Amino acid sequence: MSAVQKRKKKTIKVASRLDTAEAPRLFASLLRHRGMDVKVDLSQVHWIGAACAEVLVSATRAGEQSETCISLLNPSAEFEAGLEVLGLTDWFKSQGAAQL
Image (cartoon, rainbow, N blue to C red; front, top):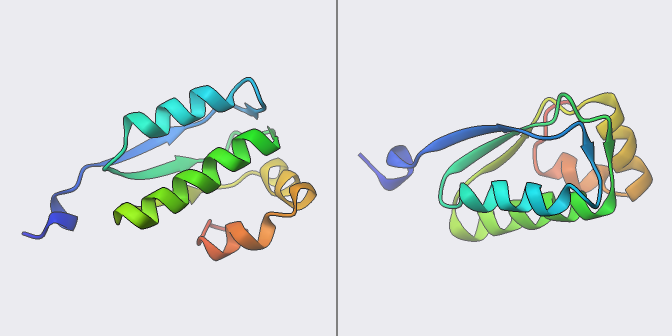
């Protein structure tokens, strides 16, 4: 069995409002699961700000470097609208986030 097959997997739900105050909690949650393949459930997100978007971008890039997978799943319409305002829609699409 390869190391990829043995790696732990985790799905995390995030707060509905991903604002500046939530950024440290989001970062800490992702950091706790470092080394695991993580699925981030975005279905309940009603608002995303730049700080949390940066946390997701950084985590995704760090995952690429460590050969772990950070998957962004089930983005809500409000999450997608927030990405549009932040100019990040194309970047998140390139990461394979479902339905973006």
